Structure formats: C-alpha cells, structure tokens
Length: 163
Image (tube, rainbow, N blue to C red):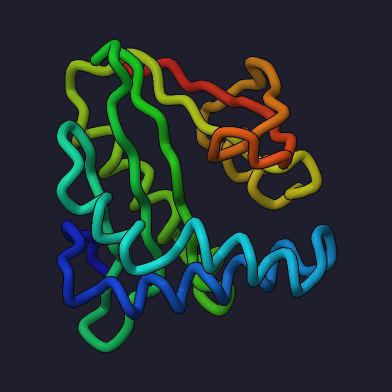
C-alpha cells in the first residue's frame, strides 16, 4: 500500500473503514449502539469533508489501488510546534502489515516545524497503546472527553517528541 493525501472521492470508503475498525475495536467496550452513535456523529461525510480543507492539517489514506487499508488525520494546534493526531485507523484485516507505521511516518513528515505529536487513546484499547508505545509515544496524561467537547469518553494522552 502507498500513502497519499485523501480526496473527496475517498470519503465514503474512509467512512466505511472507520465504522468497521470502530466496531471491531469498541463494540466490546461501548456496545454496538453506542459505537453506531459515535461513528455516525464523528465519522459523518460532512465531518470527514471538513477535515479535507482544514488549514494546517493532513488527511491521508493507505491505498493499494483496489482498496483503502488505513487512514490518518492530524492537525496543528494554535502552537505550530504541537500537532494532534486525531485519527489513525487500519482496517482489521490489514493490521500488522506496517500500514499504521507508514501512515504515522507520513504524518510526522507532514509537519516539519512540529516538535510534539500528541494523541488520545481509549485506555481499554491495548492494541493501540502497544502500537503507539512501540513507535516512540509516552503516556503524558488523561482526559475525560476524548475527541470532542463533552464526549464523556475518557482517554489517555500520549506524546512523541519529534525532530
């Protein structure tokens, strides 16, 4: 798979990939109905489309020409030295093949002025925590509202020093 910038024509596929990965990861934690609610809100076409045009951001897909196997989205904060990795998901059937690492490397290279890459991860998501730890991230705190104001979803915060 090669990593490239996402386009509007990718959004339906990305939306389906996000629903698939969220159900595979979070159904056992939150239940199917809550996962449907979250993915419907956070991963709507309108929400994804807005990410394509957000200034100082990067929206990537991993594509083999037949399917999209993963996606990542990151954006600079008001401090250009701090970038937040909002999403990095790999289709369950493609996990373990280096796609996540390729997406992460491209995100890091997309923000040459950044010194810190920050992310939030559900504390029960052991696979993601192991992946980020293996890629240089360290635990830096916690939040009661992952991903959105007043989401009510607690998460751990991890950071990686860049450059």
